[in-house]
Length: 603
Image (cartoon, rainbow, N blue to C red):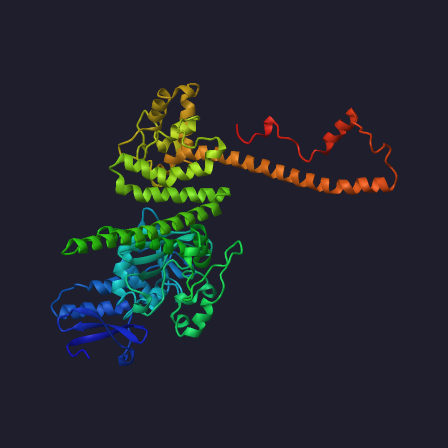
């Protein structure tokens, strides 16, 4: 098989094939794949024994004592020590930024959890795990690599996954998943595992070809990726997705679909909903209930396709060799534009209705509102780099992503969440500590972070406040400067108040970049207290109305009973006003106490 080889070393089995290392007559070592049945073992040796024998071979062949980088790399990886053990196997932290080495390690060991192989500023560290046939690298190899599938071979998959994670955009983000997209390729990133926060690669897919072209059904945003095996759906499992007869399809298509209010969705003969009879709100609900997390991607794709069709219609050339032909061509173009515009407007209306529906799901709870705000801020931070040189465009982008949401959530509270006036010493200090601006060591006459807090340089560097060595302000200097420049409404604060606020902030765990939202977060907290008070008052009023209604229902029964027993002491035509004592007694039956000034939700 290898007539020019000095030696052939068996490394490991990979399915029905085996990996071997071939040493040729010139002393070069090359990796080869052969049929598993072709391997006959003549003996075994350890990596160290092999290295020793390899050195001797190189000396005899005149190559000196050079060692192959391939075998050195393999030897190093074999000697790696895990830092722990988890669900995916041994945990390693030695592969940060080493993408190809990480893939090769997992393929070799078929087990493991490699921390921080990838990194993105907007996502954080991303781990690579071996997983199983439902998730991780094992799933990608089994389902998406091979002839006619998403990737022809493992090298293509490695290169594309690395490129998508480094250069792709966040196409979709849900509560537990990111979908990164670049040039039609997608990588699915889970945000957690077993309830613990953890970014890790769950799958990778090529959307440039249809499922029929690839012979598989895949979707990186499907909820079956990265979930329990019992939850995986037929759409992601080839064996379950094939062999479905036309009869069963017709049966599925004939099933009735109803909306949340009980309205039956009108269906066409081909099994598709008749969207012409549905409002944008109903269509958004239909997609949401039928497709779950995938609905956002589908609706977004519909908008993109309809926009592209509109652009194509607008760019259509008027043709014809005569006036009549040119007029007909122009009329056809105008008709195409009108039809495309109608479809685009419809798709946009559905997208707006879907976004409104998602907002409504979360805006009624403090946790939901905070999640919406966090997502909006991340979206703004991702998108502002494209318009960073245009201040007006940045301001408009902020209003479209964050500002409009905050108006929606808190305009009814009476709190201006956009008011950035510092009302406390903490708010004042937070808005005047810039990233990378504080001296760690200080000077002989002015204390730095080290003397004031006792934090190590490494821990302090993680906060983003640490200036370059020999640069930055000391705590003494910053406190004195801020005290001297304090605003009119904070004239009563002292130098020590400012110093204490600085120390509290830099030791709180908050980062320098997180402080940019400090004052706004304080205003949001105030608005949240108002919302809490409003909800409490609304609940009290609802309870009072409910109790009053029950009392009114019981009152006629009591009067009838009194009449039947002859207990009425006044004639039917006599009106009797309640006494002062009775009026006073009625106050004890108030269903709830009217809120006093002390009960105000926010002051």
